[in-house]
Length: 197
Image 1 (cartoon, one colour):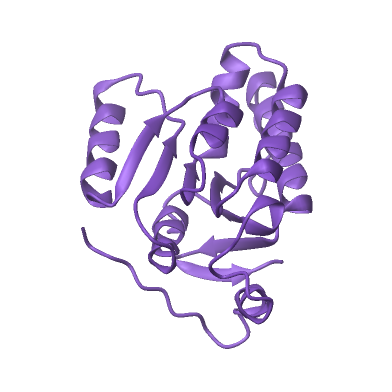
Image 2 (spheres, rainbow, N blue to C red):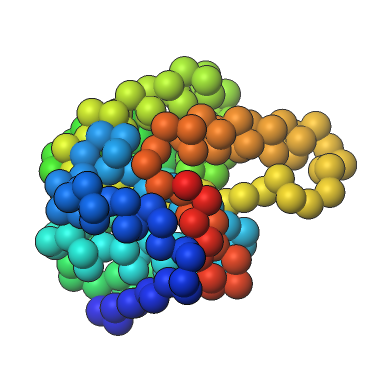
């Protein structure tokens, strides 16, 4: 596996330094053990998130929310699996993230991504508010570190159809709920991580 080592620019380490000072680097759990990584398409957010994991002992759990609906998406999934390597245990869970998080035990977990999870919930006409609350409760129960990845979709123009507008709104509300409670939020643009919290 190719490992990715991230070095932060001066002034972008606030949350990391706080965790080290509090002695939480190795014993991150609950909401204090959650890192939320946001960014646009091809921003480098997933690569950044994966690069956080060498600080914790392997094996690591990758919770994949993607449902490959066509050959091109299946190829993307295969490429991502090959990139991650043997340190990762992949669990494919498009809907029941709370159960998957509970099942991961103390293993460091990467959830990639919340916007695909939201898409699956919307297409299945699930209760999004209830699912969000269940996710937050599961994150609070976690006994190991958790990194959540999601796409920031609210910075473009207003979509021209009702479904896309609803998705944008639901994603924004989901992101606010997660960001409010987790210990650290990082926004990635052009491969550059910026500490938001």
